[in-house]
Amino acid sequence: MTTVSRTFDVQPDPATVISYLKDFGNAEEWDPGTESCTQNEPGPIAVGTTWHNVSKIAGVSTELTYTLEQLTDDTIVLVGRNDTATSTDTMTVVPNPDGTGSRVTYEAVIELKGAAKIADPIMKIVFEKIGSDTEDDMTTVLNRLA
Image 1: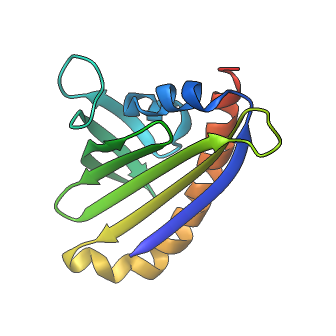
Image 2: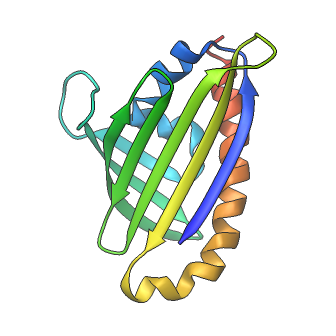
């Protein structure tokens, strides 16, 4: 299992950030590995909404179905699943302690299954790099919302 976590500050208020991040289709803008991410069924986004995500990581394409498992005023939990992995992405958004904008904590827990587990040590290095790129991209995109 690999865990990657980043905490960073952005200009928009928490409600704006949560409203944007809960639509996982927006991952195309801030997740460097995501090639496409489309909502599976039309309608408002709520717990239970699912997306079809196609990502390329270390040159390998993978498809996951992500489900919005939790949505509160300050937390979003999305769980992506396929036959070889489960990815649990938790985003916590609180007011920045200095009184301006938001503090975002993004944590991804990736659990490889079956034969894919052999790649865990290598994937930790790959996902740390992706985590840094995600932080940079997410900060840029979220600050555009301010």
